[in-house]
Length: 317
Image (cartoon, rainbow, N blue to C red; front, side, top):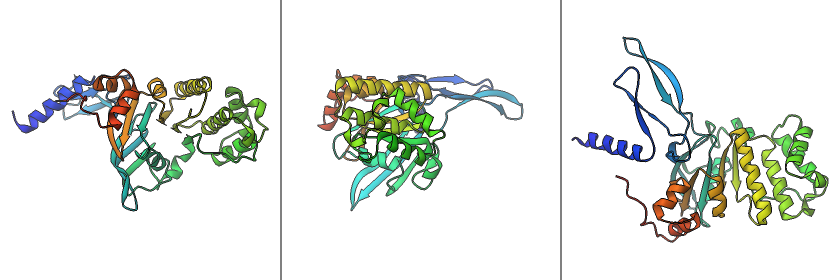
């Protein structure tokens, strides 16, 4: 067996082990892959295939080729240095449309820099970032109206009322019929009673709900969340998670979630990317990470990675 044949055989075995199947086309002699639909698919290519009719060769015979839509977020060889120090050092990942991906890592792992680059707020030192097909930050004007961001660490103007803040952001995003959209979110997120209260007078839980409303004003196709339930009581945190699940189910939005709450990640995420010192240390579904490290929950997996106890990973031929 030649080296090329061995590589193809190795790839085939890995692909089959990760839940993919091989199928022959109608024209014969050609093969294509069909992505397994669901949480067990390979997370780096968890994209629903589409069928496309193709005519092959002079005989005019037809076959169906399965193609995949472009990633909602595509990060390739991303590097960001500050005064010679690499905050992010050559990371690559693609996020499928309609998926929820957790971005984990300790302080200084590079999560915030990665999210800021995806938002187009930071220019990469090298590498590329594309969101909904647009290169960031050069083409961010093409997609910013289809994105949004939420974090409890980013305050809105405290002297403005909730209604005034939401109106300002609705104008920035070019939301049609702002009054109706704000009223709908106020009803869904239980904001109505304090819509005309200064934002600085709200409790932590109320501010979080207002921030979530802001992030949903433009019905984003890509939603970036930075610890959306930090400092919330269990009841309010559960309520926020439930609303995020509902929004994703209704709209098919793509969500990237940075969080230190491992129960939250296990509940919401189809896939987990774990970063450490600017690198991606592991990337898989929650279930496979638990199996690979032989752990009961993601917090134990996270500690294994953070403390360098990665020897429990399975070896892939």
